[in-house]
Length: 545
Image 1 (tube, rainbow, N blue to C red):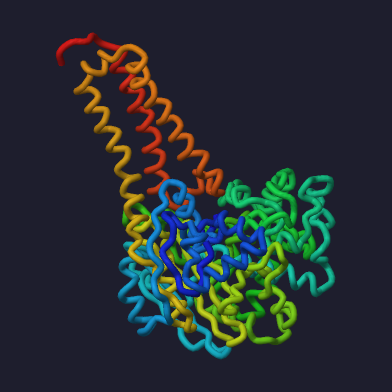
Image 2: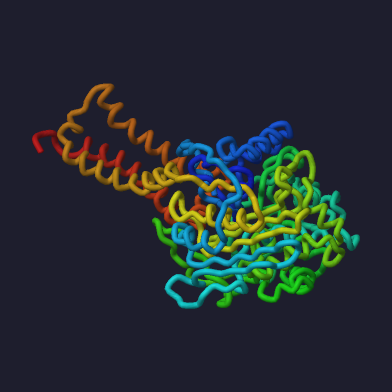
């Protein structure tokens, strides 16, 4: 989606249970939490949020999914509107035990078919590992060199490419985008600066960034076409008015790279980042099908279903389309933490790792920044994939975790797996995700809701004599009020809540098809039940059944 990317920020202080349906997101990932966005817009509130995070209360105060971020943890978070169950904060410390033992115990609960990780310590790659298979039902095993869709970790590559062009004197961070991309000339969005795009302070909303996650044509001009369309979209807010994660920002930056460099985004990133860093098992989404990469698996009622094909999408490559192996991403983190002038100056790398402004106190250029434990990180959530990269630049430590399975709601979540590996690898505090009982209860209720309505239709038919006998003001009210309430509930479930939380229904169905099906079925059967009651009441004759 990235939208990816659900997928919000996974922080590394003591972590408590989340409000029901933490998501993800967005979008792609898990990074698109509107509650966080509101907090970041107010520096005093933002400081309170950070203090709460350090005490392990961040989720209780702020997190609704997954995007995690995580981009994604993208679908889960919007469910907070439907339930407000909180779990108690758990005591956190650096987890004990080896990474391998933890994976063996936790991976079955996550339901992911395959996983790969790599660890950097003191600037050197010290550990790599892989478990499981590339695709359910197949016998090809995941290796540290297996490419995975990385989701919103890709944003750091786009930010790095922009910074290369800044240092080459070809881009001014404080120039408006219309100065470079003609389609924005004379448009409301044309005055947005490159810096504001990099830091998610442009005014584009999470919802605006989650509208499309797939290519329309698969042509080489797909990115140009999509950004031309975005040029006519008015941002939801004024620039620098608030921080709000939006894939739109990085999609525009991808097109900026093409215009300024004169190369396709894919070609520029490959030549100027992947090849110099030595990322031999990585590539940029190009609209083609790649059999060599891991297959994504989406949640399906407690299981995981593979995507039909390993299709990549050119139009969303800048925000979520870097396809990379764990070993290659370890090399990437080495480069970002080496303090040397290479693909980017040491000063430029440090700038990417710093809070960008008062409007963006916890996001730099393509990376989340946690001043509490001095980490920088980004998660990713694309359909069928969830990822997490975390670094402690001052200690030259880093870890990346890649999973070819998307999280369900309460069932088959990957958050604890990814966070647990990360905490063990670089010594961060982590208390686990808790029981997730509220999320599980919510999902079970949503799955059962259509069947409850169907059984209610049977009950209404069996009680048809009583229903047909209703008369007067109160009788009419009892007949018609359910139709009004179920129509209202359908509108809230299928349109209002997704819109408010930046998660269109199409995105929900793309990332979590089981959840999308349950929501639609619940909304439709609710209205059908109310209509059925009215049909029973106004047809047939009253009398004994």
